Image (tube, rainbow, N blue to C red):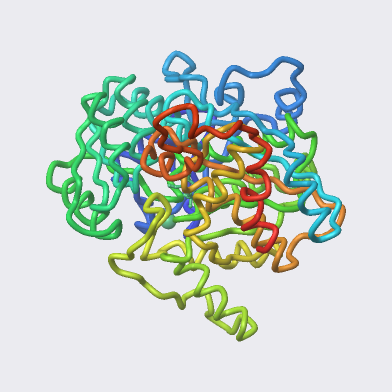
Length: 439
Ligand SMILES: Cc1ncc(COP(=O)(O)O)c(C=O)c1O
Ligand SMILES: [Zn+2]
C-alpha cells in the first residue's frame, strides 16, 4: 500500500494499488485483464506551480518526483535526464516569415544533450530503472527499434538489472555498440519490429520475466509527461502546436496524460494541436489518417489502418509497421485539432545539414523526421499566424554515425596547395537552404 499514487484501469475503472499489484498481476487489470491504466496521484495538484516556477534550473526529471510513480527517493536512478534545453530557433522563425508570411514563436526541445543516450527515451529509462529497483526486479525485457533499448540498457545497468533487448534486423549498428558495452544483452531478431516484439514476448513468457508495457506503459508515459511541465517552466506557456515524429506515439500520449492529471484545475491550459510526422517509407498511421480525413472520419474510422510488413526504410528508429496504437492515437489527434502526415525520409540528411549549419549541433535521423514536420505543417497550412510551435526533437546523432557521415559535404581531395581555393563558409548557405526554399 502506498499513499502517493494508485492505478485505475482505463477500461473497467478497477483500482490497482501500485506496481506491486500491477507487476504481480503480469501488468494486467485483475478484473478485466486489460493492460491500459492511468496513474493517479494524491499529491495536491497546485504543488505543480512551485515546481514550474522554480528559479533554479532543475537537475533532472526527478525535480517532478511528487508527480512520478516512485515511492521513495532513495531508489532514484538518474544521469541528469529530462531537463534538456528548450530553445527558440530564429532561423526557423525567419523562414516561416519569409516563405509563408507567418509570425511564429518556434521552440525546439533538443534532447540531444541528455547524458545517457542523447535521446528523449532517457526519461523513461530513468523512471523504469528506479521503479524496478524499488520493487526488487532483477530482470527485464525490452523490444525496441533502438533508442528505448539504448536508454533502458544504460539505466537498468546502473540499477544492476539484467536487460534483454530485442531489436529488429534493420536497427542501427551504433545502438548495438551502446547496449553491448554495458553488458546488457542484445538479440537482433531476423525480421521487422512487430516480429521482434513477438519474440520478446515469447522470451518473457518462457522465462517469466517482466517486459515493457508498450506505448502506454506508466513507466514511459509518466516520465515523458514531464515535458509538459518543462514547456511551462522554460517557455512560460503551453504551445499552440506540438510537433514530433511518431512511431508508436508515446510522446503525444504522454502530453495528453499531463493534461489528464490536471483536468479541471486550469493549471495547464489547453491541449496543443498535435502535428505528427511519420517517415514516408513506413507511415501506416499517416496513411490511415489521410484516408479517414478524405472520407470525413466515418464511424469506426480509427479501427481501419494498414499494416506494413518488413518496411524498407531510411529511418528504422521510427518504423512501426503495425500501428496498434492508431485506434487511440487518431481520436487524440482529432480532439486536439491536429494532423498526421508523412515526411520524405530522403530529406533527413538535408535537414540535419541545415540544423548543423545554422545551429551547430548534430541531430539524428529520427529528429530530422520530427523537424521536417514543421516544414510539412507549414506547407499544408496547418500553422496559423501568431502561434507558438513546440518541436520535440528526440535524438542526437551520437548513435547514427553513418547518417552523420552522410551529412558531411565539404571534403575535397587535394595534392598540393595549388588545388585549394580560398575557403569561405558562407558560400554553402544557399545550397543548404535550397531544398527548403523550394519545399
Ligand atoms: C528520436 C525519436 N523520435 C521519435 C520517436 C517516436 O516516439 P513515439 O514513441 O512517441 O512514437 C522515437 C522512438 O523510438 C525516437 O527515438
Ligand atoms: Zn479493468
